[in-house]
Length: 481
Ligand code: URP
Ligand code: ZN
Ligand code: ZN
Image (tube, rainbow, N blue to C red; front, side):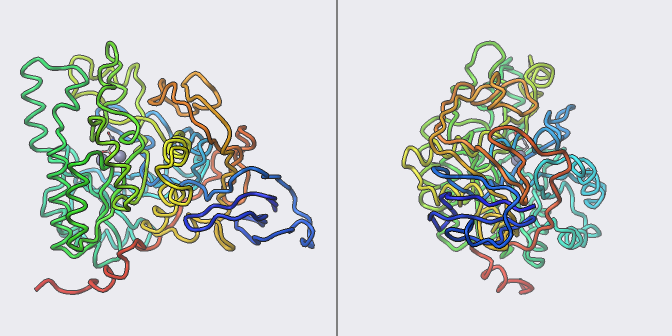
């Protein structure tokens, strides 16, 4: 199958030019002008992209499909969640496989492969959530890397369930440093948070908003500070996930100033939603119970500044949906039982384009970098993913910068996620994906899904390739003593 996309405006993290793009099979074969005339073999399909942007497919490096959590499971399967992602212009996700405490990480990886294989609409990779790391399991991390899983998530939150102690974190970072892989940190002081949760519940404060009030920004800042200090001593790069507030950003900047190999992502919800959402009537505030929680609104400007100043590298969705009915309901009368997480994989590209590019906060190249290229580099997928270049996978979004859309759970054009609400209900955007190619195949055609479950393939990732790759390599194998 070959596709010629004519007259588009090709935008990458660094380029912005008009050209035709010829896709042959799964990759970009030619980029140039007047390709229609020059092509010896006619393309199977020609798409006129006049007036449209040609963007590298979005990469969302933080999703949770079918994640067991709090006695239930996130409501999007790999089939439904990746299809929704494709509608929204995302053509690759990095989801989180989970090691059951006391069991092998390799088993966890097998379980996640079984969930995704044959079901995904777009390409997918995995991080591994490491819940414990006794000495005998440390070699598994090398094996995971050989299998293309070159990043691990560790939690400083959820004591007794997911929390990894500081020794485990240090050990994992040392090993990641040696192997050329990357530790992703959920950085919050979960031990103190659990104390606050107990105090709130004992005082009868059970509504959803107490989820936010028991997770103060200082405790995220403390987690970020600690994670970065450990990474500094371990001489390893680190990636802070879902950074939500100015306190945490301040700690990130301080560490970066002293040369720590620190990366961080924020998520669209921290840029666009705020703590006031927990005051929605009745139990509706539960829709926004996620971790970290939504913050006071002034943090949003600080996060945008962090994106502009390149302190923050990536915007992900942390897509982890639970239905309001039956799932979030588990925590009616006790906010600590509300499953943590919210939906966003479908909305990320258009919301960030609208609130970032249309408002002038970021230019269109930075938009591509934040939603695609940076994740490809950091997580070992570049240049196969994250750009439009000859030889790269033909993951291309034909994006209409003028199309105006109102996001609503009730609009079948804007909501394909398997969840009974939209966190962005009523948000208006200008700029929306029209047609989406995943590895050369059209999967969304003028807003209609034309792909199949199983189109998506596992992405075997390479080593950490972010901005500190050279420094990380120089430290590799260097004994501490
Ligand atoms: O609330 C969230 N973010 N749920 C997903 C799990 C995590 O910590 O990323
Ligand atoms: Zn997390
Ligand atoms: Zn997450």
